[in-house]
Length: 440
Image (cartoon, rainbow, N blue to C red; front, side, top):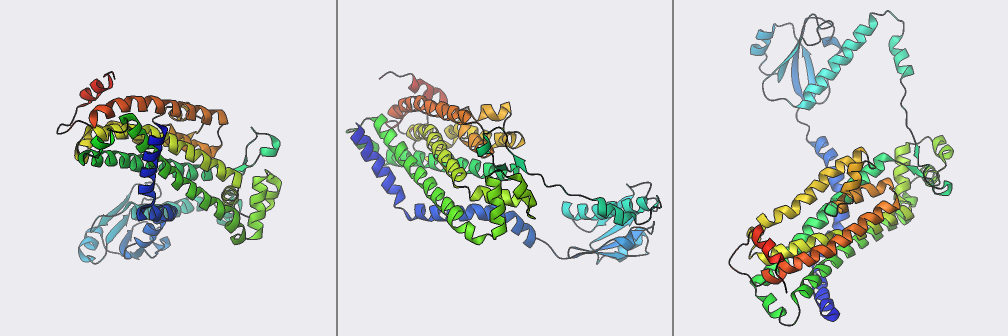
């Protein structure tokens, strides 16, 4: 039995690893993930439209002289009445009206635009007016050099966070921003693996069923062994991809980054790693940047992340691919699989929503239970791990996940045994439940 499953695993593994698509996605996926993080900023940078001319009617005489034009908006004061300006200044994008009682009635501001406006444009105009009115109100207190005083007392605080719930030699600097970003990335990696590779198993079963290959194969191997070999073979492909990414990132963090970063940045990052707040605080550098560099160059931390990622990718994939394989065996085409696939994909989407609770409080009861429930734990737990949660919670989540996989394989195998021989009819959920009750 073991040799037959091994042959199936080898066949599924070799068929996918040798494809050019596997090599391309393995090498390009880290680049694509970085591009996805940078894309919003680039889109905002290159999506700026032409400069818009706005005529300003200021009955108070306080605001218009202080409005500052920029590359997006040009303010042009005018003495025309509102109705005249709207008719005569049709070459302007909009007319901004500011009432004479603006200091006492801050709502007496109106914008007449010739076309739709954006929230960025409206917020930019209102924020300028708010700042001007605040300055005018402060002048009424008749305090000399008030603006200079306010600028002098304005203070920005950058706080360094250190965990005290560990042994003194294990205390290191931590950053909720770094943990949040890493949690989001890891959660989406799990989301991608569960959907893409799970659907790959389902598609493979459907194709072999339509080609009547399964009928030949089950003459020499049990349906359960066939399903397990297919699941484990594709799982090995997913795990190999994660391992390659882990080696690349650890190599970049330990070998490349120390040579690219300035010496003072690396010194501050090492102080963060060693939990020495006094040394890190004396460096005239952004603590968040230091903590990010410290995390990227901490081989032990990165290795822990990727070992956890491998375990949860493997366990989560085994759980979901068993269900996807059962769905693939029950239908004849991908279109028929859509309806049966919905109950399987809903928990994955729910896990993404639960990540918001993790960001808000990684130690909340909601975050804990969603990271233990096997259908959501792969995504939610990987979002929690960067916050360095207790090890017993990770082990509990893994134990429940792998135990659930064994039970799910047992159920999926019952559907698989019947489904691979059924043609021409899409079964209902009620029929699938009936198949589970069959005795063999």
